Length: 400
Image (cartoon, rainbow, N blue to C red; front, side, top):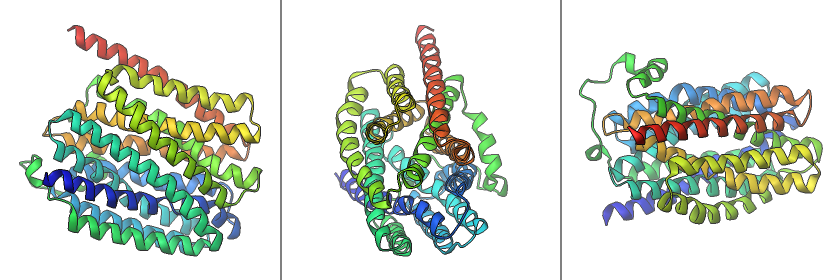
């Protein structure tokens, strides 16, 4: 009963955090335009943040094995807030990138720690673990969508108002997590060897993945990274496209995200839970990628304004379904000794896609406003092919 009540408290704080984490996204195009920065910054700055996310996510995963997750959450939310302080004050491209890199170094730790907290406390209860990961993904995306809406509305007042509100709420969430989250130490296996300077090296944390990597896990991580390429290329360009091509304010970004929040909530509590409980997700997760591929391809055929926005709303809600399913597949192939590291590497693969998805989107946008969406379509098509290759690997495992 205590664990169930604590999950509820944890999820409430998590919802508040995910709202705040997305306040700045709808006003970033406005910040770039108002301060006369290069248009490519909307992709380059995000890629810089995700590069640090990629480097540090495995490290945070390893640290979660040594220290209580609630301590990691406090450290990472404070670091994230500091990065946003720098970003909000930026008047040049160099300072924007510096702020995003600082934030990215800690962002990965926040998302790794969230997932590890759930996985550690659920233990070997696969059904509860799956259900809790779906809830976590739902909160992340619904909270994020509502955060877009709130951030967009705050952006109408000023960009500075949005950032100040975000920073205060982030710090508050870190303090609340540290105070209310359970100490997960009794629920995980602490490594026998003490933490060393080598363990703190982000690159050694990435290389340590060879200790638990299998062909099936490699395919899961590949699908995660490649589909993330498509996600971030689409997402980063859509926001800037609205401002650049249609002249829409940050308020419109917020309104669209509010609609996405309700649709995401519905799909996660119907489709995602049905897939988890009544199907073998090793086979059925691929069909989510097929739908994403179809939707990203649709706007390349007809990119009229109404269809462009309508497809984005449906796509954003469907795309979210893949996240908890892939997390479940990765967690299901881990054990007590490497679970924190596996989840850290999973987050790193998400950020790997984010680095190059956002970077390519920013760099190729100037050559053609629709090119990032073409790139997203190709990425989802490749991710779908990798998903079916994973299915074949899974079937071979079951026949052995």
